[in-house]
Image 1: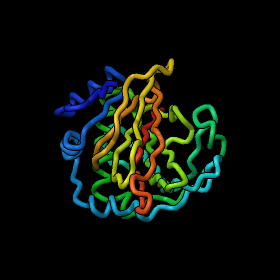
Image 2: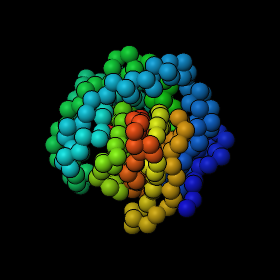
Image 3: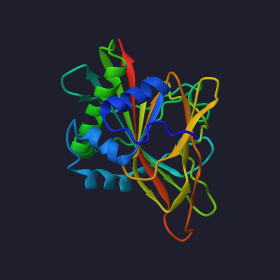
Length: 246
């Protein structure tokens, strides 16, 4: 299947890929170059290491305890500072999340150190610039960021998207790989609104990224399993969503 975005060399190419296909897969080297136009990743070791301090998601309606996470919200206008908001619950309707939607889910906040650090600021600035170019009429954005760790064990698959193929109920989504240890599978698939497959790819290297126009595409990720059952196995990603505000 196709990998829209492979080999994109610049921000214009990434933007055109999302505009054309509704999504883009961006390899780590291209993503790093794109991000560094908007700041630094000077605290990346601490940023990536913070995934070791996530708490178990106890809201899983399937009873699973394979997902750990933290959560934070920000707001942004076209220009000016991107401002972190007070902590709040994460909410999705059952139309978008039939498994876990319909309730307020309170997760531990992303720490102030990580949420205000260089890597997070750079990622959010990049997203504002990209999504602002894709939707230039938008005066302001509601932003949510999710730290996810999906764990796999010999007797339990880790499900990055336990709700299956879905949309998030926002406007744009960034999925950024932070780390991948001792797992196989975890293939991302992207589908049009008729649920026909548009493409598939696997995030394998830190900073590999998927960018999705949520109004135009469904997406999902296949379960992960440990390669060596005697060693820890997990998939760490940062998911950032942008939703238009009037």
